[in-house]
Image (cartoon, rainbow, N blue to C red; front, side, top):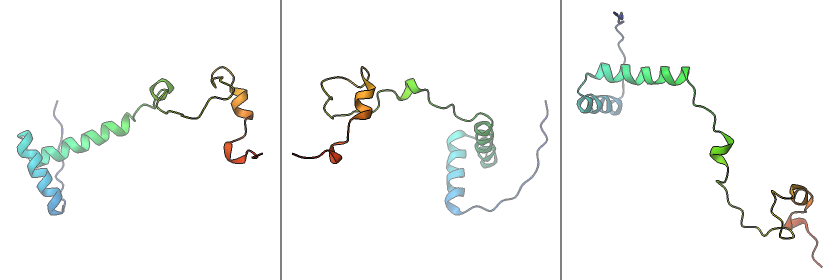
Length: 93
């Protein structure tokens, strides 16, 4: 299968040219090939956006060091926590 190529001339800052040259040496390819690979990676990313994280992937990533209300975990009685007043709004006696 033959792919037609189109010539494109671009101007880059020296830092980007240095990066391309270093990558080309590292990968043993031309600077043009490095650019093609970078663009192809972007094309593939645009066509296959990252999957959204599953709730199972994020479950348990936070820690709450606040004391339990009446020694009851929130999972056993969520209403208790939803109706509880935040500490800052509780009246002091």
